[in-house]
Length: 377
Image (cartoon, rainbow, N blue to C red):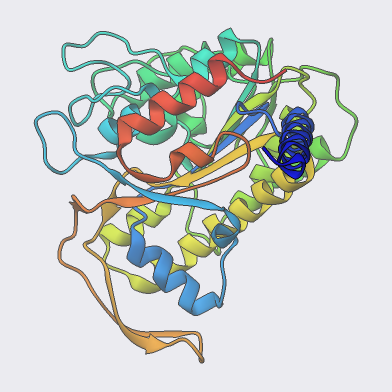
């Protein structure tokens, strides 16, 4: 053997050891696999064409800031086309169920939700939506009832559920029948029951005052701003972006982390009406809230952001327009209901890399549950 061969071998070994040392140092500073916080954005009824139209009209979206992409299939048990209750249950619990069911199995057994796992693990929790807080998508994270239309019972589950932040409409379901604006048929006063545990605000002014003052750690807040559902995007206040910012301001103080679900609820309603302009307005309103979440996540460095949909509504298609002029000029619809099309799945932050690809919606539910059960401290 030549002398230079031994020298070469020693240099190769030394170089390998140095490389391993560098890898070890890099892994020491790598972000945790599990996030400290999770923000889940659900654009109800939002399909690929809804995102396309909003992007053409605006030029760019906050959703583009998320770095991992894929699709979710949305079928329900016994139904090729899902509703929001069944698809929301799949996302919230990791289990499929029948249309109309709110986080119960097809046989009616309660299914534990990601929000309930988060509470069990000491995390703060929140819901911020542009519908009644008793509507199907927010309900699946807290309530367990066989019929999504039972808003009165859902309100009772929510009032007893321990969620730290509740922002949306539906005040009437929490007021006794004797009160002005009540949507109940009994005299149970859920607002009175909640006031012992939460700060209750009902107007935008009260909301602004709440966020403008110092709060004690662990403060819980319910903002129920409308008797039933809020109005359309340009009429409602606070906006979904403001509700998201307010929820994050409250929840971020919890040292154990938080789970927040934010829903752009009325994208779905615009799809049911086959109204393209309304779809675009609601999708952009939702995207503004995504921007608030992404701003927080980019500053924080420990937050997983997920943007998805429960199903597609309208069989919506973008048929003509101009990218240069930010204009959608012709669209089409195949239904006034839901379709079975897959929906977008976007993610950013710790734990996002394995969410890419094509999955059933139960995959996302189980992934979120695994994260909150082993959330990074």
